[in-house]
Length: 215
Image (cartoon, rainbow, N blue to C red; front, top):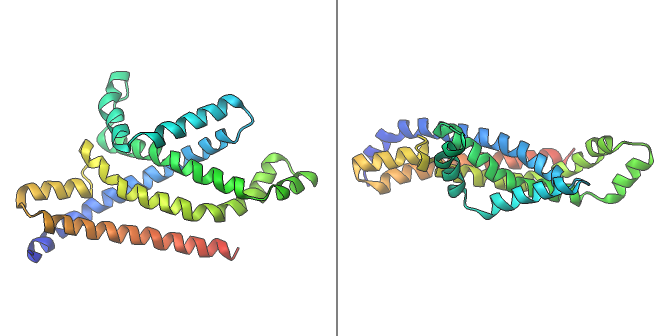
């Protein structure tokens, strides 16, 4: 094993890892927003909104994320959507993970005892007040773990944006393999950095879980 090569390329991989973190963070924010809207739509009293939410979740959970990225980046210009690789990666990953997070959010909301909701309405709370003061604080605890799992999946899935020429960790590894012909060492460095990032996300989820558990 060529440790000297691994040491030489390490700074370049760290820089690429920051791009991976940026893509993951932005896609996570987009995914959470879309997930909240989709969950609200699926729980709405309006049949059209429920249908829209169901179609979105079914389409993005039922098709590969790689295909979604290709459709957005390569097929987008045909319908007037022209995105740079980085932006296409963020949007594609965000819409994909949002479909999974929507089910996590909806499941947590449904898990809250209906009796508490009915009690809150009985004492005069509006639907919004009931949601904000009674349902969400309890549902938040139930969302942490599933959303954490989704975040880890998003982080690892961000490697797919290398296929649309986003210069992140996996793309950087592929470029160095082309010049060094040492895939074991190169992918070993990339794998190490992915493990560090996944561990960091797992620790944050653990801290949040403990924080909400004592609230």
